[in-house]
Length: 299
Ligand SMILES: [Zn+2]
Image (cartoon, helix red, strand yellow):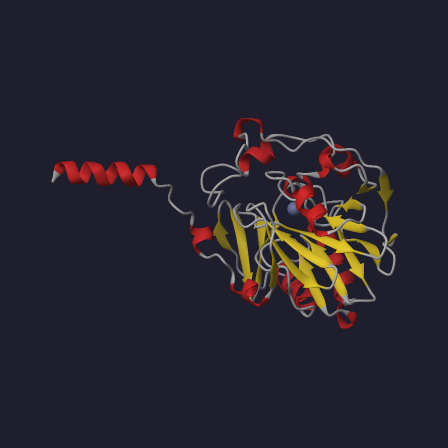
């Protein structure tokens, strides 16, 4: 009997426990999306609209989503993800057009593979310039126990994992337009989550790529670089666009959301700021829960 217990204990110590977040996957929204085959099992690729692909990383707790957006002449990769596997190879498997990188902001989980690209657009802010130098601490925290679900890619070197420095080849500003040929993407500066946060508007197709300004989940607003006044002003700016939009494409968790979330986020943030809602302690921060999303604020 004792031997059996010992054997069971040994077995459970060898079998990695699935973290809680990962037991909830796949999220129901993905059932209705068109999945596209890709060779690299670190990623899942979905066609959201003609010429718009979501490149999702479901094996890491951020559940980051980068987007490949095609025009007639060139393509934009909106974020490059964790840098744990090779997103450039995945994107090049989806299009033969030249690919430029634009980032929703320069937190490590959105710029991980920027270093692989020559053509990188960056917001003209000091925050962007600092992050382009790379860093290791934030990247290492992403692979701490409980952050990974399933296997890391073969050949991944955990000890060396870092956000590699990258070169910005074009500086961009609010309302700049990026013409891909038969598709124009407009840069909407939405500081708040970070000083360099942007959304990308594809006006003709009614699409808004919201980055981390909106996604269905706890929206992280607790880091020192977050500015809540700026965030509220930015979501108000996006909410004005919502009557003209068909779809929001967020940077985490799920690649499709209804545009009427934007005015709801404005209302929710105003309630939080006016002290009308109570936060619940969560991982050292305060979570304010609403239907379909929540805010994670510093205590
Ligand atoms: Zn972020």
